[in-house]
Image 1: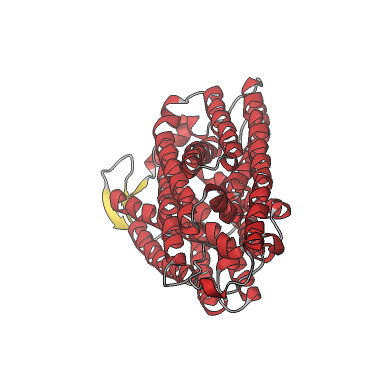
Image 2 (image 1 turned 30 degrees about the vertical axis):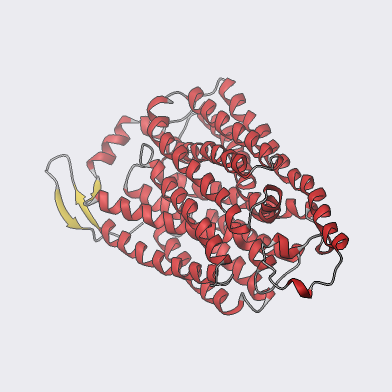
Length: 466
């Protein structure tokens, strides 16, 4: 399969399905907060712009978990058993904390639990993604890296479908309270106090049902995390792409390092900040925009917005896993950037006036933004070894963007700028992303060449970009 012996091939044939199943759980536990967000706000007694801080605290934990894993995973988890136990522990306890989240009525406990959950999740995805490159190398890992993100996207989609049966109907909710709308004209109210109290009681009674998607998602992670423990107990050998000394010498003899690595990786960090920022503008707010935005959709139709985004995201990542085999990562990034820019322009034009315009633009954005993480990871991995501390850079940038943008989106959504402001913010991020990748591409072309027989010399590469 990968020029490995029989034992190594068996090891890989077990590892990859377990990795995919747990990464599917990653998608479930990340997204389950999105469509249930207004109800979590109702349960903890905070407004919509405040509940968005669950994403900020969560991705702060994600950032720290990824950073720590980049420093310790390769250096201290040196055996197959230690690597697998690390993966088991992080994803299993991620599931445990997800189950606890909806059972608290304290916002402080909610954001603390989300922080710990995402700390573990950041550690898990960083270790898993870098391990794939470690196992089969930067070239062969491309479609597998894309496939990891594809199954995460599948988890995103399934979550929106999983939540739907547990949501209240339009008649059972008070949307003014749920959307934190302030009513200033008290004289125009014609309902009695008994009638006014009834929707609140029915909403409180429905809160326990919202816990079920969390329980199902967390249980999935716990159950399939056991696969890593089982693999650790089996007598098969874990492959190591970098253990072949001749291969390492050959690669070193033809090394072409980036001339300004600090500047280059700083721009990579910013690129991932913006890319994941786009995801986190939309992922927490898609259902809320449909429910509380200019279209004023019913709960079921509002959750459909989330389904279209996550459905497009999943389809895009599944397609990217196939496309990565014959289209270079650079070209995939360019296609993605252009499509996201067009999708955001389309949403600016139609999201506020047409439900189907919102659905189609959301699906298109989700489809092509999903290409960006894996394709850029593969593009950089081709130029530099990203199995060590560099492996966390991508996830730290992603975590920082995911940390910063949800509260910004929540603030401008409820401000005088109105709900459409999050669509305009998405467009601005797409434009900035195009600028950042242009800078990255220019920096990547300015590289240092070296060989066994001569010292380093600097030149602009004229070979075809990968």
